[in-house]
Image (tube, rainbow, N blue to C red):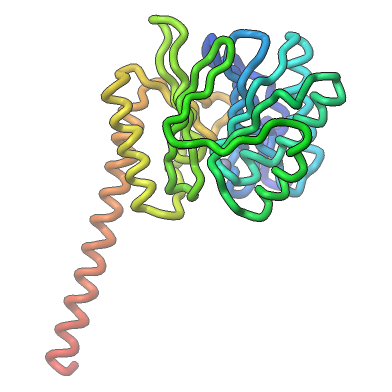
Length: 275
Ligand SMILES: [Zn+2]
C-alpha cells in the first residue's frame, strides 16, 4: 500500500475510558484517511461493538482487524451482545460477516447477537444483511431508540448528512465520575472536518449534537476517522469541536453566497450595459 504509514497497518487495541476500547480498523488509505475507529463498549462479559470496518480491496488487512478483535474477546472471555453500525459505508460495516463467522467458529452463540443500523436500501448493505441473516438478529433502528445490555445504555441519534442513514450513538455514564460520550461515526471527525452529501441535513445533525453539549456539559466524542489514529480517538471537549465545525460551515456558506452575488451582479451589469 504505497504512501501509507505502516503504523496504521498494525495498531493494538487501546483502552479509552472504563467503558470504551478502541480497535483500529487497520484500513488506511483513500477516503478512510488513516483508517477508521471501531469501539468495544461495556464492562461486563457481553459487549457492544460500534462499527465494524473493513479494508476495501485488501482482504489481508480486513482479516487482521477481525483477528485483533476476536483475539481480544477470547483473551478476556468476552462476547458481543450487539453490533451497532453508524452508516452503510464499507469501512464501517464491511467486517460484520467476518466477525460473526469467527465468533461462530469459536462456539459463540451468534444467533443472539443483534446487528443493528438505520434502514438503508443500498445494494451492498442488502448483500451484507443477506449473508448474516441466519447468523444473528438484524434490526432497523429508530431515532432515539435505547439499546441496553447488562452494563451499558446507548441512545440512537439519527444524524443524516454525511449520508442518508447516518446514526450517532450516545453512551450513558455508569457513574457520576464518567461523562456522556457520543460515537460520531463520520458526522464529526478528529481531523480534518467531515464530508457530507446533504448540507441541510448535515447542519441539522451538527446543531443536534451542539444541543446535547448544552444538556451534558462534559460530553465527549469518539469519532470515526482522524489524521493520527495512533494517538487520537476521543475529543474531550465536544462543545468547542462542534462550535468550530458549525462556524467553519457557516463561514464557507457566507463565502459561497458572496461569490454568487458578485457573479450575478457582474452578469446583470454586463447584460444591461450591453458589453
Ligand atoms: Zn468512514
